[in-house]
Image 1 (cartoon, helix red, strand yellow):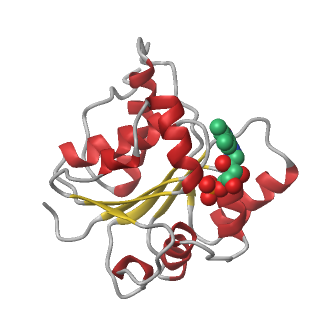
Image 2 (cartoon, rainbow, N blue to C red):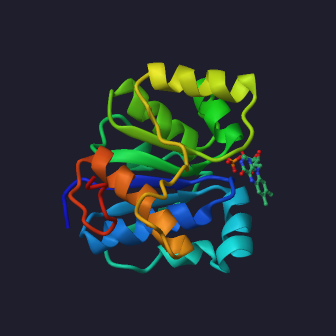
Length: 188
Ligand SMILES: Cc1cc2nc3c(=O)[nH]c(=O)nc-3n(C[C@H](O)[C@H](O)[C@H](O)COP(=O)(O)O)c2cc1C
């Protein structure tokens, strides 16, 4: 396992499969993961994947943080990470990050990543997008975040929903600087 973990936040947007794919692939790659699941995301994990948040517990290299508790190392800029990924990211979560609200652990850790100039990858999921959503994305992008919409490509002829989720997980890996070969690259 690497010394520094990736913080993976799963917020209350549809597309829990994207968060699960990033989690599974990070553990496969031997990367330590600290997971935060919002209360709405718990509901969506159950509805979309029949999973409880305990899925993220009890696996070597994985830790599950309580979104209501701030007294954990990840809430501090002195705690070094390899970056944070919010996947999927709801518009509510995005808006609160854009406003610097820090009202739960997900928002606080995102705020820390921006202020420490560390990698923050946001995978928003909503359609269509209002001016408010678009302005919030621009705001956090200007503050240093990578906005990576859950928009998988179809150039690799995906056959299963999991192939689409892996495409997004692969792009997340690319931006975290972690080598991956679980999803094909466009080769012309
Ligand atoms: C079943 C369900 C699906 C949802 N899907 C989305 C979504 O795709 N995108 C979004 O921005 N909000 C979605 N929402 C609304 C957010 O969950 C809600 O605004 C929540 O307060 C966001 O906060 P959180 O992401 O911190 O949990 C959904 C809510 C539910 C119950």
